[in-house]
Image 1: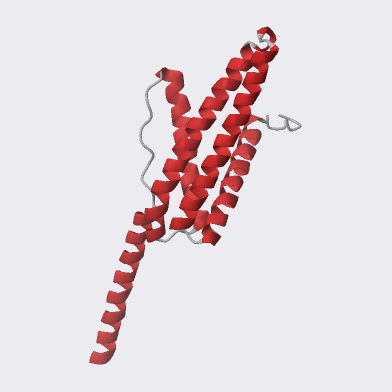
Image 2 (image 1 turned 30 degrees about the horizontal axis):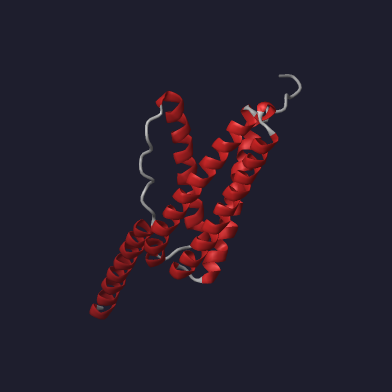
Length: 178
């Protein structure tokens, strides 16, 4: 009887330690929230809120798809956040250049149009160079299979996000009798 009671207590104790360890490890593997963005007025706040919501969804999506250990997460997220910030800077510059050229396209000389197109090509090359640079950094902190999963997960996230946006913009069908 005493042996059975001791075994039950031991199993209960081991179970409690195991559950608390798993819970703690899950909290550790979750990356910190993105830093607050600069204030750009009401419209900027809404835009920043949307961007932060998307980033939060992306972090959760990638965390789930990559199935990172707490050690991997500690090494991976700082590198990924740095990569993401640099990529966002390049893309922001690309969008700005595109909008500037689009506004004054009809008034631009052939030389100016050529320069705008050359700038676009250079910005695309910067993106590719950054991706190559960080590919090496990702391989240094993750096994290659998880690096491959990262690229696939990023694409899956983009597709799901685009589908959500597409479906959000659709009007629901009108049913008969309504």
